[in-house]
Image 1: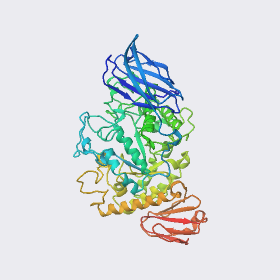
Image 2: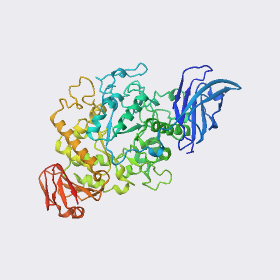
Image 3: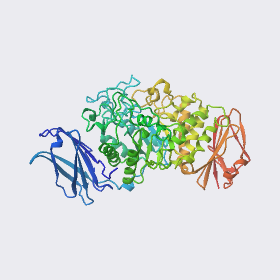
Image 4: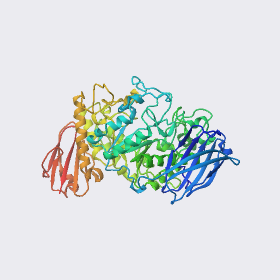
Length: 612
């Protein structure tokens, strides 16, 4: 991909009069690492006009025309000496100026290197804004929005918004999470089923039913003041069918188009399968995700640049703490690598997690940076979603232990970490907005649930909680997506159960919430549980033991997945215990000498702290 990034899209109506204008993005910044900027202009017959800019440090490098005469792309160079301020973009019909647009260049709030993304020290909390808290009922219905609020409809809009999140930031601090992944908040002006946010109709505008762009920026700033990072959920593979592009495409290759509706086969495995047909690969990448989600063609250089600059704009504008990229394998992988490279060039310490929803370790690892010697498109992505470990954890505590089942599923999955370039950077989870909630998967068995939560918050990787999972919120995929995305209790005025104020929460859920807070407090206080080396031992007789150590301190986690109490002989773990002199069980106050054996209750995960 050329160095030029689309750092701006201008949408205006150049109808030879001063009509209403829309600019995307509304401004840019001086001093970016990449000094080239491309403006994409949309208006009736704009290709007939000539462009002139007279501003010190801003040079028109080239003007591009499209098949559609209603578009122009203007390449600019912004020198390092360019001053903060506004410049005029003049449009001429022959020698007559017919339109002038003022474009602003702002001062950057901080240098690129000072924008740090999420990492192993963090615990991520995933929430769906429409279903979390309604902080401003006045924006539940907006005249210009096609779908209105209907909380009685499980698949409708319920009214949760950015103000609701902002109002409850202290809840996250008290819980112990340090990063929020919020499902997409950009405009989804679709006729129905738009609450989830994955059918974007405006890449530069927060959905008015969530709030405004300024509300988003204010929420991020407030979160950062409480040491909470905001991870923005982005979508490059597709857009919503009501996006303005669909009314007047710049070119026929802006989308992947077929003679009739063609759905993706959703088989990401085809992309790296050495035996795969080109047809299967094409359907995977070019097929539409759904009727309402047209598939974008990132091979088009102008669309590719548009998407790259859009993400950079949001990072710079909102001071993001990370990006979660939806449907990462479905987009063109050469483009995705170019995008990741562009972001990391601008922000070296930033982080992106790509949703790689695949079944096996090898297929997942393919999308992590340089895992495989694929000379055509070696991956640049640092962090992937660890679905294989999620599946293993959801199976482990429901299975009878054997050579490969039960807790051996955890061992067998982690033993394949050699396939990743950096498994420690994987985002790990027990549940999310698309799969069964963990509590329901273990039939609301508190003992099994505690084992899963203990594993999640003490093993390698960057752990993620899904909203409500901290207190065993139920939900089964077979009952529909809405069952996985029920309203957070207490997020709406008049809710009979209010988690935020500890009102009427059932006793088992109170106990679960307390347990989660205790685990998070332990993890947050101990770097060994965040970045420490993982050493595990082959499971036997239903137990599984592993250690996290940073040299000065270690933790031993011992799981008993069986139906009988185990007196665990510690001699077989001497390799990991040898450097340490004292031990205490999580929850106890004082340390003691390391004994010859410890007792593991039925269906339990016991944490022991070790010091020198």
